[in-house]
Image (cartoon, rainbow, N blue to C red; front, side, top):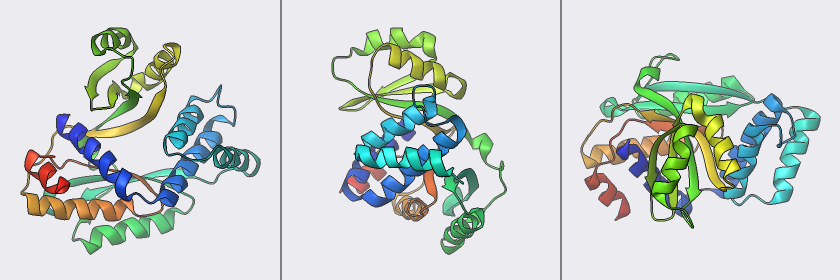
Amino acid sequence: MSGHSKWSTIKRKKGALDAKRGQIFTRVVKEIQLAVKEGGPDFESNPKLRIAIQNAKSANMPKDNIERAISKASNEGANIVEVTFEGYGNYGIAIFIECLTDNNLRTVSAVRSVFNKRGGTMGTNGSLSFLFERKGVFTINKTGLIREDLELELIDAGLDELDEDDVNFIIYTKLEDFGSMQKKLDEMKINIENAVLQRIPNDTKVIDVSSAKKILQHIEEFEDLDDVQNVYHNLEMTPELEKALNE
């Protein structure tokens, strides 16, 4: 788990420097549209929409943009579906990709093209599911919170692991406890900076720094695709690789 957490931290720092604002907004809008499609436009009764709105705010999306996305999805409907892809990059690194799309053929073609370009192999759905465990991940600001007290409060809500960086606590739950953890944080009046379901690798793979940097370039190419929401992998984030990325 620590390797994944470390990678998440570096990814956030890197994203703050080079993420394309428009691409982030596009992804957040799709998340909102899917939430409205599945549970309606009332965020009070639609926890998935409530989280999507919070994630939009965390991405600094203007309030007007959020309201337009909800209104459009509510009035016109949203032809958005979730699709996933699995495969291997070079050096045997497993890659799991989550997409939201209104054109599955376009998305399949784009993802396959990136696999082929880098010499990877796209597998069948379910072929790599055993390598990842889907967990809820909540990010909350540490201000005013004491770690030991927080852990005690969240155990009954399904706390699986509590991690932290300089600014935030990162809360991990099992998939089935995602809703109860969200409810508990709401009851405690703790503002959720970000809430997502992530695929955490059960085991990670160590490769040399040069090869690892090539794999990360491959992963960035997947992330640059318009329909891609998340890319997960089982590359171990070693101290040597972390140092090389920060240079």
